[in-house]
Image (tube, one colour):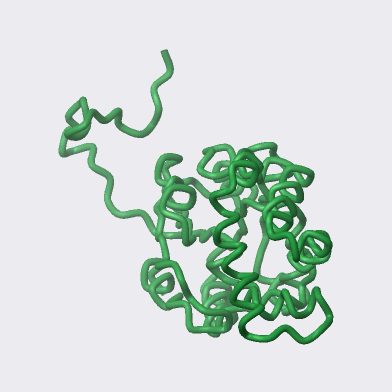
Length: 244
């Protein structure tokens, strides 16, 4: 039986002791993989998106009712079911989001328009420190890649904001019929960049999905959730972890 390069762990820790002579010294980070939404970019607010889709003024009271409807929709059984395997194909991704939008009766006629916003580069806003962090990593010779659970090709969005030049690998879940934290996605990115998993840092905002890169032998850094569009994301921590 072929053993994984990672130790097999029980509830309390590794099952087999690792001799001290075999404990590896820290490995230099040669590559950084980034998640997309919530990590390097954020969509505009739902209120702004709804106003753009409806193409008419929406008062604060009406907007509050629409947003409350979307909140309730997250618990709708049909919406919950539509999220299963959401990112394994373009079709599943569209179905998941339009089902959620349409769970609000007033938004149902605009579900396709709201989904189209997701694929429109101009609706995505880079965080305030995204460009500087990517430029610093690139200048230091660190290879960069994107690993994202998504239903469309992200390169146009990065290009729209002049950030595509920093990346040499693009791993979109829908193109691989699977989702993070499947090791297939992280391993594929490492192979494209020509680096070992142990030399690679995965950065994202989802503990299970992005943090799951550790299960594939990568290092992982999970950003705190909730940053507003255009805010400072705290990517200076990534620079420190990468040793630059």
